[in-house]
Image 1 (cartoon, one colour):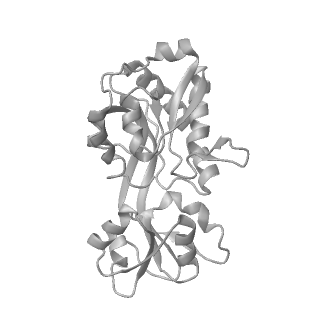
Image 2 (cartoon, rainbow, N blue to C red):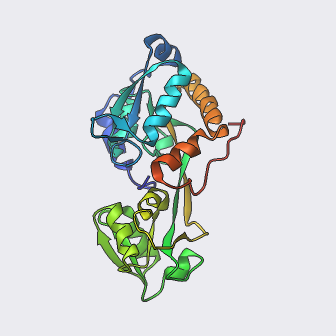
Image 3 (cartoon, rainbow, N blue to C red):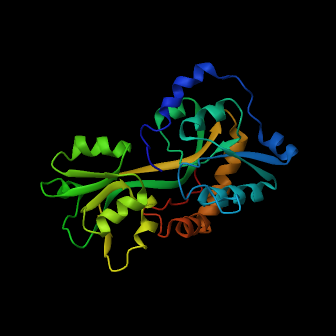
Length: 268
């Protein structure tokens, strides 16, 4: 989900205040207990959100349940804010972390990753009202980009696309609405999370610029050294990718196919 470069890394400063030698539950422990603790991030709709009945729903919820079913255990959902995902693994408060956990070298010093679960594509979402075949084509005077206040991409745009104007709002829905209404020309963001909102605007011809700016790979986080659990999760993910379950679940929750689907490989 968003903030794949920096979000959550502030949590590294918290590590000294937390127990770093907590023994992670092994796969045998999880199977013996009959429960797996899955960290989910409620900041990223539609990864995990509560419905009107107060029940969890979303992409991560469905994928997490599939994993639990494969293991033959029940799920304990543990809400983890963006900055809590790594500390909760290190301190053995969760057994695995979902929540759009992007692989990067800083986190890899503290936790292990499975093979990728899904991708996040930083790209340009525009309409047929503006020309441009690469993101650089949009870096010109007269172009207005819509974005959200506080997003890391605002700084990225200011540094890499200095010729554009920025129009800032407070939500994904408002961002898409600006473009649909012609008050902005395009959006530069992790576009996968925006596609479902485009369906709310009939009569607008949307397009994603073919050349992505960056493709990030999000995986499942596991405590360092928990190799048996990681190996089994990799096998489960291979099955879920090969069957099409991951991509089908993504499209169900986000209203459009994953822009860059993960290609399953038996070699991990």
